[in-house]
Image (cartoon, rainbow, N blue to C red; front, side, top):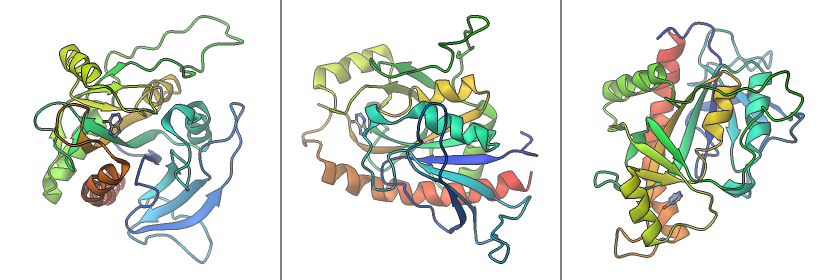
Length: 266
Ligand code: HPA
């Protein structure tokens, strides 16, 4: 894929409120017609390429904009995230490509806690979220094509980078987006499995669709935090989720650093 003139953003999920070697040069509080994003936008470079003297990120380095989906204090639950404000704010500052990091529960046998996955499909089970920009003051009714919700070129680049860095990552999975904030019942997970879902999370939608509406590339790196409900003997606790996420997120951080380096080298 060509990465020239791309401005990347990372939307960090549970556990990812900071990046490895992310040198922040500037934070910007932005407001949008849809309200306030989850966090200020943090601008910086990975691998210390930022220019401290001017306070400006250097052009043509691995500059990236970072947004914490659940806020810096991790206090905004998935169903309360202002997805429209987040995506609009990123678009407005010139972002062309969003790399989302999402915590998920594993359904398919190989989706064990701590593993990384690049999903290629979504089934949306959310029920009460504002899921479009195209609702008012329209000159014409608009339906986006969403057959393939993730950018396949960017997914390929992530997979290539992971291989180079010897980071294990599973390619291809169907992501079930649930409403939350409660976790699923065991029967709901069986239904998702029958539907063909491989992983389940609460933040993948409407984020991916809104990015498409704004014509931004979008890809997700999912981190398996637990076996989905009823698939293991253990109860799913926040402590267990956080513990399992740690290892996966460490790999995700390294992958993001390598990815941005590669991407910015074109
Ligand atoms: N279900 C939904 N969302 C999640 C899960 C889960 O099991 N784990 C992490 N996010």
